[in-house]
Image 1: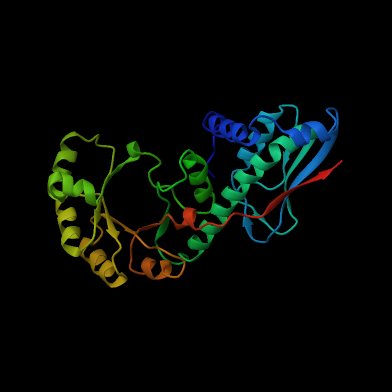
Image 2: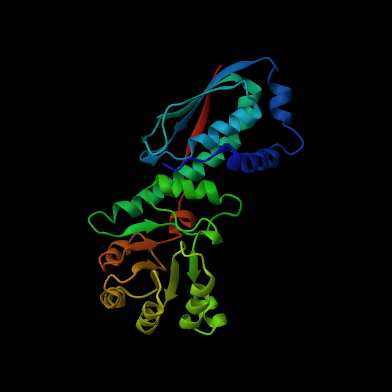
Length: 281
């Protein structure tokens, strides 16, 4: 499981808490006595939830009030069903209430992504294809969302632009073609970085292969053309399929023999998970 470090999480969570609090919590501060203590539980309200990024929820509560006691009941990657407890919190009631919505928002999003990702991964069973995520993440939340896709069973593609080279359609046009683009890259690129090239037809596949691409992306190709591309490449480069990948077609894409399938659907099509925080005064 990916591990999110507090240094990565602190600015993200701080901004979320500041956004939620605004000028202050009138309801909590006026209704709830300052010394009131409580025990609370975060529970799932649906079945088949893949738990993800529990450390984010923990840090929300601890940032609001370091004296709160937190106990993780469901670890990242575990499955939760309706009425299952994910997290126990005890301490000052005001503090729990002020952290509640931010913690639930993060968990609802991350568990939703992990749960949806797992559906894609399950459809690849028995094939060699591995699921990759993309950089089409919510601005500011990339580390968290990519941790959630990995928890759901996907592998992370590039986290940032420095993680690898992906020569896409506009790079190719601006550089003057695939061969010209790869020629410039191989002159100056650190030798530890792989070069991936986006292709849209078999002619481009052959050019990318001849130019020395390490990974060839088949962008929005129909499955029959993907099969021809895989036969053309013959293992001389890794093959990634991308574009318009859905639950109803990912199995067919995997059966073409590609090594990887990348999709942003694990993020943009992931419904949030229904969670609740319940008090026991």
